[in-house]
Image (cartoon, rainbow, N blue to C red; front, side):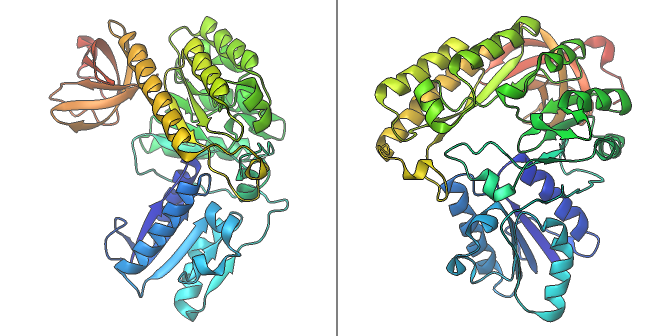
Length: 433
């Protein structure tokens, strides 16, 4: 029998999808999503309305490919919408956010009994569901260390979809990291819903990073997927400054550059707090790339409020942005607020910030030309070996050698669009991985 997985959403979902693949591959053959399959797994997302719509589309697509297949739908969208029977009437297995470890067994159960299965209930206290990966399907490997959120921003359903904060035992994190790096994944990406709020039995995030650097000998680069401004401690910045294995890129969500909007969103900082934080980081690590998330069109966001956001982003000189139009989500405070912004205005604001992001990124990449850095090479395409440097900028070089999976020092010659064109340093061209 064949199975395929459609993964939607964040890096945490990506990690979990890799675990599903690892478990199912012990019994079945995996094929790409879109090919004929006997078992379809849709790993859903619900953080935006678009994500929810895409989850539904993928369910319909799977059923169209093979009407007789086992259709298993898992994750955040299921957790939030499972009471709507019309959405899932054509599904065979529904799994919410706190029964993911049961997925392989539930597929076996359905194949035996051919009776619909639902494992979903509201979150209460739930333990961290450890999913030990033995390998990863891409060059850099994600490592899920934390799940859940206690913040309850007024626009967000994640605390309801994923439950309260919980973290993986530090010894287990070290064990998974060793396994993945010994398989050749020299770069690991620490991920979670609130990665920087990792805490388990006295070990906080910085202490965990320090242990990983000390106890995982094959680890050559450690990247942080996303971290809140309030979670970037002076101790962590000092560790980052003194150990170049920690990637020089931090993704620090802003959401708005207007204090009025930040307060309405329930964000626990002001624009002054945010600016002071990133300036203090840059004093210690001058060339660091700091990117961010921004939501436009939040209820009540006036033209003046949006203009304040644009001005603040320019002042903060962020490297690039992920821009999202606000979409009302059921079960959130913001959905009931007055002064909802028209869709046309949201689109205009997305366009303006996207254009600003492109300009900021091109300026940042241009500023790296003439310097050098270490690049993790991933693939050869259009005659160039391509990979990302510590700052997560795409770098291209020409080489007759196989560079896949290797981290090598590159001299950056010039910017080419959003990429850097460079060359390998001569003294390392024949180094092994």
